[in-house]
Each structure stands twice: as structure tokens, then as C-alpha cells.
Image 1: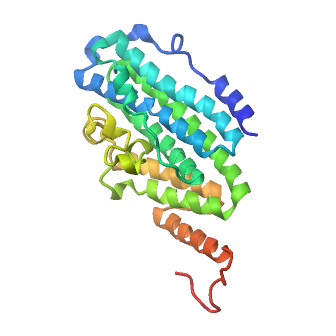
Image 2: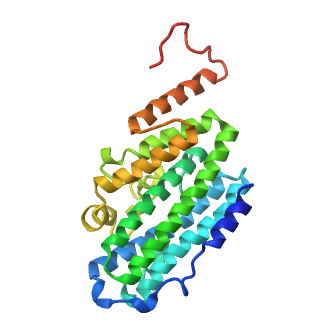
Image 3: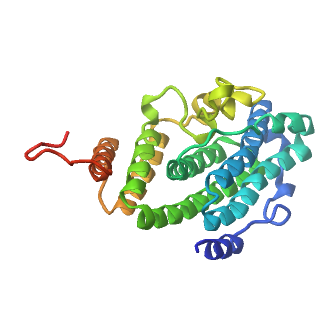
Length: 293
């Protein structure tokens, strides 16, 4: 089991909201109304760990090890929402999210393949680590800068924990896991080609509720994320490149094969998909002399 070791590792570096956040260093003149509004939106977005945890527990009923780890992940992600709300409570109380605003992002996600969901959230942690690092640079108020730096480190550690479960999946499921991870990896590393940010909170997850079936669509300002990324923290091509590089680097380590571009990862995805088809019951395999696509 991975959970006992991961619990100890994350417990050893867990930060205290009272001791490790420098509340006394607050500088009111360094916090604009615009910045304070973005903190509210991030607090609500982090609350979405609640429906995500419900999804993970439902779709991993046969995996008690991973489900137990969710107790740590859920606690720390909800703590992210709480520390952002505490910041607002102390310094901008009129912007503290209401219970109704928080509850609006709790809705059921459609079932999805567990391996693909694991990879999706691994990539999401990488992306959020970079978003929060950039947010810490954009903010000018010292306390919120520290908070975002703290959250960014948590997200990086969560990504590392997901990576451990992905390695375990490779040993258990082989090409099925490789195909699932490559499929989602190509999607999540291709954000430059899409009109929206590629993160679990901005993807459609409940067909019956479409179009209000993303976390972002249920925020008080559904257009907030794009404005935050493009106009405010200016998460530009250089920062997006850092995200892509981390995804490709970790996929290279996982698959023991070098991927320097999304195109190379996509070719690997096609290779894995073909191998799964060839290995399927009743498959005659490729014809003699046939060339792979």
C-alpha cells in the first residue's frame, strides 16, 4: 500500500494556518479590489475538491489504498479553500463566499475511466502549481503572496503522490494504463490549441447538466478563469510551456521513453491504442506485412 507512506510524507510537511501564514504582515494598500475578487473565485474553485473526492471514491470502490489517500488529498485541498476564505474574512469580509456560492460547485460528475481520471488530475496538479506560482508573482500584498506560494507547493506534492499511483497502475494494468495516460497527456499538454484552460475545473463532467456542468460555469463570475489567466496573472506561452514540459518529462519517466514534444507523445498514444486492439480477444492482429499507421 502507498497510503501509509504518503500520509507520513505529507504529514511531515503540513503547514499550519496559524503558525505558517504571516497574517501580521498584511499591507492593506497592496491589495486591490480586483485582486481580492480573484481570491474569492479561487476559494470557491478549491471547494470543488468536495465533488471531486465523491467522484474518486465512487469510481475507485475496488481500490481501498487510493481511496484512503483521498482522505489526505481532500483535507489539504479543502484547507486551501479555507485559508483563502480566512484571508478574506480578516481583510475583505464582504467578499467571503456564501455557503450557497460554495454549494453551487457541488454536483455529481458522470462516471469516467479511473485511469484517465487519475492522469487528468495529475496534470491538473501540475497546471495548478504553475498557476499559483504565477499568481504569487502577480499579487503585491505579502500575506496572499505567501499563501499562493504555500498552495503551489502543496499542489506539487499532490502531483507527486498521484504519480506514485500511476506507477503502481503501470505495474498492474500495463498497456491499458499506458494508453489511458498517453491519451489524457496529449489532451492536457495541448492547451495552446484550445480556446479554454485545460484543467479539471473547466472540463464538462455531467452531460445532463450541460452547459452548466463545469466548476467554472457555476462560479458567481463564470468568465473569471480566462480573465485571471490572460489579463491578470498573464499566464502566457512561456508559462504554458513550463506546464507542457513537466507533463512530457513525467510521461518520459513513467514510460521509460523520451517525449520532447506533444507530437511524440501522440505517436506513442497511437502505438498503445494499436497494441490494445491487437491484444483484444478475437483479434487476428495486423496482417502480415502491414505497416502501422
